[in-house]
Image (cartoon, rainbow, N blue to C red; front, side):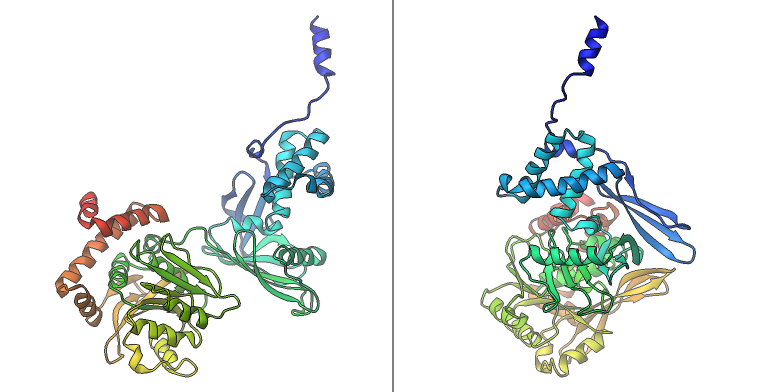
Length: 499
């Protein structure tokens, strides 16, 4: 009887597996190829449980970024290629309002037809979704919060990333000619862009909103097709994170906070990749919750939680036209991604009309920024410069074989257009030193109807709060925004909680 039961079970017809998207989220065996001679430094998840990053180092070759993804046997790889063809044929039968649902329903049909085990189906779905809906091989890199830029300089060359901890390092991703050409073509086609020998360059966005610049074949570069991705953050870096990294001191951030609330206009200056946009966005998180903000950029980077915020991105209209239009929207705060042309004059006009403005500008020092603004082609009249209150200089510096970002200083502009240091970075001791501000404190006191001592006391109170948030690890956006919003309504109650 037991033998009969066993045989019935053994020869029972298999049923097609039924499953949903959540059933595919299974633990995977990840693998990646690490070159000989490299030793592991650290490993962390990217998209759990499907991808992880392994950082390795070589004595003479430096750091290396290896992507770990689900392993596919030769049989599974052949099945994957077959599935792609079959799904492509039947996907029109499953069209819905959501592309992911459409693709999954077609995938599910093929998997059930072929009686593919759920564990194998989970791996296959990861790769099908990665290639069809996301960004192919570079998709895991878009999940890495430490990566700022991703670039490929041609056929057979490793994809490089700019990592906030390890700087520019090669990855395990290498695309040969056909694969790289197909990748840049697919990126363009998804956005309705015709990329060809006659039109070999394009700027567009990936599925997650990250900006990508692409070139096709050897019409632009000798090494073939290329791409450069500027990642978009899902969540902005907060002032608390910048304090925690010692980019700014708590007192500097408290001073910037009170200055912004008191309608001080600020320019964030520095070199390429120095962190000026990050610093400006972090400072903008201090803008009062209900204030009306209009931001203007040519590439979308600013990210704010404010509900009364109008983000503008230059498309067919230029920055100059958008800034002029912004003045008619009666904003309390105007944020300009970067001033580099005639829009700088309109921005200073906006300041003179009572709008508080924030922007970034390239420059080697605070003095160089002022000289650039007043010289051709910008040529802002000196009579308008006194509407600018502060210049904040942020840069990249090397310390103990590591690259760090630091606020090199904060300078105020007085009525005579003279720069006076408010804070300066002591590079030897790696500390931010308060100087002897005068003009800006008097401006804040006059604007708020306070005495200078009351201004100084308020900066002390806010420094205490920011220091508390830093020491308690409250670096993410939501807890930070909640506390800042509460402080605007009940400062004494918030301070009493941390006393």
